Length: 130
Image (cartoon, rainbow, N blue to C red):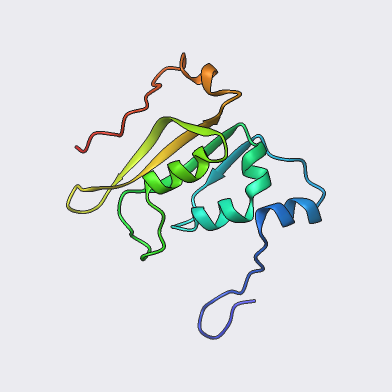
């Protein structure tokens, strides 16, 4: 419930453990928008991520949530080690100074990456700063 300080305690589980405890199937698509905790979720969901076909991750160009915020190149390297490649970008996020600070990134496993190359908007270069 809600505490007197206005906070709510919620249980946390590593993704792989949550899938096991709830007898869920392995996901084929994983979407993460978790304010700088992407690397933690990937580490706790190693099996789920490794077995997925597609990842849709909010990624960071600046460490907006502190020094542990993983940057786009760090996330890209982390998921590359699990067999994924960057296949495109989605929404771009700018701060009040019009500086690009975050971008949604799409990663595909080696199994489905070739299918992404014919998709409209397929692009592997970083987004341009407006």
